[in-house]
Length: 90
Image (cartoon, rainbow, N blue to C red; front, side, top):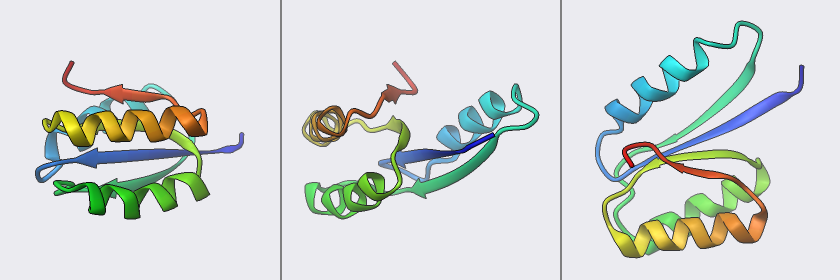
C-alpha cells in the first residue's frame, strides 16, 4: 500500500484534530500514513511556510481553523495543488 500523507492544521493546540484523525485512521488496519501536524496556525505567513511542505508531500488536508482569511487561503492553495481539504468541525 502506498504511503498517504495526512496534513493536520489547527489554530489552537490541535488536540481535537488529532483525536478525529486517530479515530478515522483506526478504521484502516494496513494504512501507511505519515502525519504532518501543525498547531497554532494563526497567520498567513505561518500558513505560507506550511504550504511548502504540503506541496512537497501531497495528501489529504484536515483542519480546524476559525479565521476565515487563513481558512480561505488554505483552501485556495490546496485547490490549486489539486489536494482535498476537510474542515473537521464543519
